[in-house]
Length: 533
Image (cartoon, rainbow, N blue to C red; front, side, top):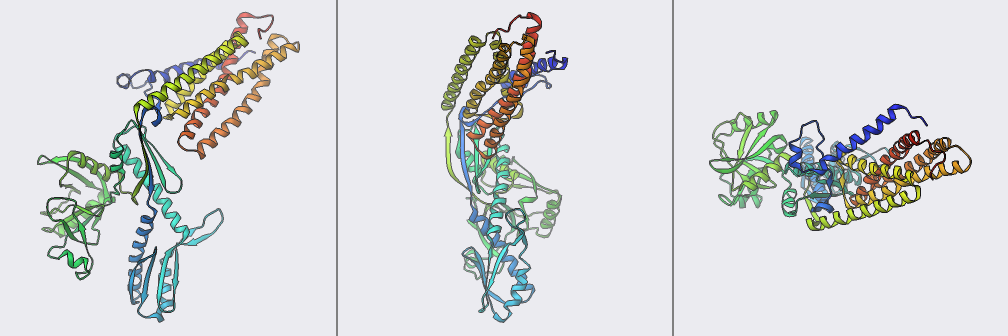
């Protein structure tokens, strides 16, 4: 029964760690900010169901992703056929495909060979499944050609768009300074956003509903927008609506993108001439392009287009060589800050559609905390009383271990930034029962050994030794189940799995090591003739 000294040090260290890590949850954030930097500062993160907030379920518009790729493909097809000097007409998008008609049907094979160079290989679904082509290219004898994305290519592009959207949404929420937001992927094309403490979903929707695709175009003056829309104007022009109520309602712009928002490294809301504006700064490559554009187009209008609307079209009065500029318009301080957040976070690859929204009030969260607290207290009191009545002094050891177990769960959640939800509280209640169950296994085995005629010391040693294997096996199987719940589940299921998993890890320490150290200390002091079980 004599334990090595390091185990006593481990138990003492566990209590010191448990109490220190728990202290930040017992004081306000203001007090924590005034404490020395070496002390722990993390607090338990309360989920949406406990402190209230906004819940949004977003869907990435897959059709927009496919359309964007088809529009790129139109340009690639035009360039390939022009380079090969193959005539065509009617190039455009029809029914999720790019179609065209050759002016010389006899050159069909030659055209298909050129277009085949635009068809890269993609890995097929499944391990060892080989590769597939991105495009399905079909040609008819009359010279009609159809290009469509393969099923694998469509799935890959939608999946990539969802992954990119997830990161952009996370950056936008973080830029707001919101703490402990939960942003998770759900299914093939959906994103779940939960922002505790924020009870204005409209502000979140405004922020996430904008694609924030920023491009810079030269303005073509002296051309009638109606002529361009009718297709009678010069080639390479387009008509874009103005977002500014002051000035022209629409502009005629060159389709060529001179510079894109991908080159931006910073954007900040500020004031110029007592009016809110957004200052921006390019990276080194973008700064060189910006300098060249402004040098070559002094005196011309340079349009800044955000989500297919001109938000500003300033005149280039002199070359701008510093790689920075100002976006002005009819901004309020709030709208200027929103635009700066969008530009810093980057553009979404496709629009997001809100398919579900909920707002959880603080009163409902307070009721959940109250109900959860009552459940934990009642469960704890009943378990503590039962163990004390049935096992006496050994029940006291189990109860002290149970207290350390619950504290360690809260400590792990605090330090790892896990979110405590109402199902998480249910996991803690379940862990309370599991924690004393391990002690029950040990005590019953000690009782059996004592009845078999062993001495108290031999019975205690055998009880812990034989029951430990059963405890470890039982807890490992439960831990596997908790890991599966966390991996395959979402939302409330994950919250339950987190507290259950932490509870199992804490239980294996408290039951096997902590309780044994307490029993050994008691035995050394009392030296009982019989075990009081």
